[in-house]
Image (tube, rainbow, N blue to C red):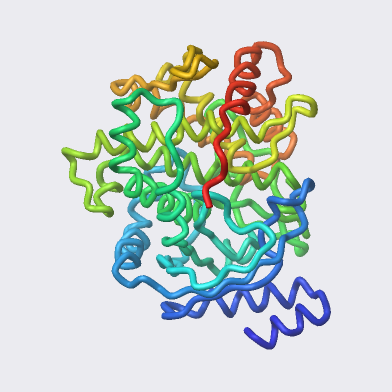
Length: 395
């Protein structure tokens, strides 16, 4: 692995870094974990060039035991996702999933805020064919949550969520990284004319229709989707967490019993709703563009909640006399209307990723996140309020 890393840094060879990553994936259950390279593409407007990062961390064995249980049960949970079996990987490659105490993290832009968990390598072909690792940067998440105030909630909802927020985030991170980024198959045609799927068995997928597209020889998710790919994939992973967070058998991994499951699901959806609203700060009306992949995806999820009748956002005057917003959820509709709508949305995200249909994906995704379209006047007003109420970033 080290030899391939040296070759990559000396020559600029991406293939050498891929080889190093293949060796890294095979290194199971280390006590000291590390990764290095040009990894995340969030800072590049085109979503192609990776920012350098290198980190070293120590594995927290007690917390890792919970994540290992999630890995061991993953093959039971994957069929709960709303797409046909043919759209899932032929074989789930069980990864390492560790909770880490970060010793050092060097980067121009480390994982921001509560996005301090990583699914790597980012090479889609390695994830699908060789496997991947999930790492939860536990001490970074805990420090950020303790300093991050809750906004746009009633006093009772804020009190409820604040008292359980760490457990809510542990659930989100685990599901997002393992069953979000770790799920779903991409359909490929190879140079020799063979395929890794049987189109005759795929049939029609709801309102998205039959499969008419796939990845041609040499094409990858990154090269086809470019900048759109980053936010589409992050939204897909977030939506997987939101959807699977409705199943008591999934929540039991974190010691949440069936009696407490409904309330935990409510808090998880509440977290996503306020994150979606706060994410508007990353939207630029002048260019109808978003500056951060996760925030764009969470706003799309908020739109799904609103359209299903689960969520509402009310404009009001705050205690300081300035314009403010209030997010509320219809708790009883989450497991019915909310689950159905979020499942349909997730099915679409996965369908376009699996088939490499960039044009279809853009039309679908823009209908939730492009605010220049008619009917979004209220969302633009929300954007202005969110910008004016921006809190300093916690240190």
